[in-house]
Amino acid sequence: MTQATGVSGVAGSAALAVANPWAVVPSIGNLDAYISAVNRLPMLTLEQEQEFARKLKDTNDLEAAGKLVLSHLRLVVSVSRKYLGYGLPHGDLIQEGNIGLMKAVKRFDPDQGVRLVSYAMHWIKAEIHEYILKNWRMVKVATTKAQRKLFFNLRSMKQGFKDDVGTDTHRDTLTESQIASMARDLKVKPEEVVEMEMRMSGGDVMLDPAPNDDGDEAFGPIAYLADTGHEPTQMIESHQRDVLASDGIAAALEELDSRSRRIVEERWLKVNDDGSGGMTLHDLAAEYGVSAERIRQIETAAMKKMRKALAEYA
Image 1: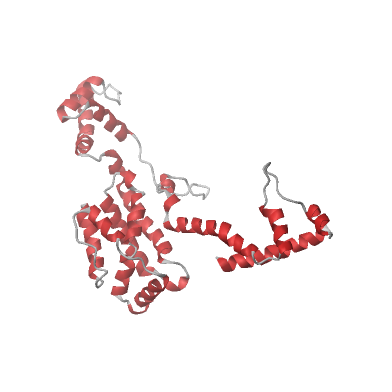
Image 2 (image 1 turned 30 degrees about the vertical axis):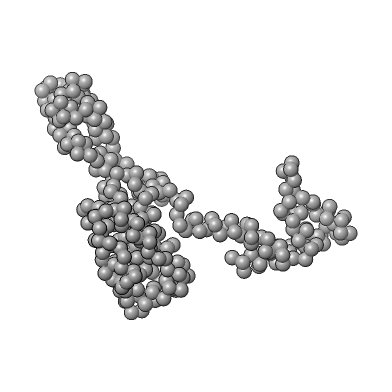
């Protein structure tokens, strides 16, 4: 299936399910135009997403399904880019990801308390992974016209050389003269013949190996197929942690009285130039004229109050 047919077919089907202004995804033969179009589609608010998801769940509203699909097409484009290093057309990867997105929309339950973007990520990746797994061997062995020509002719030509020298030979590799002869006959470079022989002699690598005899999951390339550093969900979580670590803590400290706030800052937030922390319980006890146990109690109460404030802030 070509890039144009795969991508425009899925996009066109989704566009037909909705009314303007959503029907802006073109039926195209240009991948750049498709990506540009989906990036211009508006994102849904939480309220809109919940509304459309409930319409789909309760009444099988296909227009609502189309709006959910269209608003997340850019997510598929983003995820598919992480798999471009495997020799597969970007359009085909997007097509497979769009299929996963549609499956996610069909199964999405708005009452589970998660956004569609988080739920759909699994289905999008699953479809792309399945596509790569099915095409991995041919992708790695032959990706160009010349390589395909080598792939289909190298084995028979190599066997012909063995027959010419008799059955007593145990040579598995080609000689320089044989490589030169094959390159000349197939009109390719000798280096390409050597590379293809190395590819064909190598065994397949299972991207998703089965568990071993001990029941533990075996490690395979599927574990590091995608760069997870720029996944939307992880970026959102990272941003939320940064906000809590700065603005959130500042807001929580504002809820404390001056003594409790200073105790928390000295015990947990202060770092001296030499890397040491602030004052100890005994130092603070001497300053305020109370016992170290009393300082610990004030600190515990302050931390409890801050945790409550942080939960409300989040």
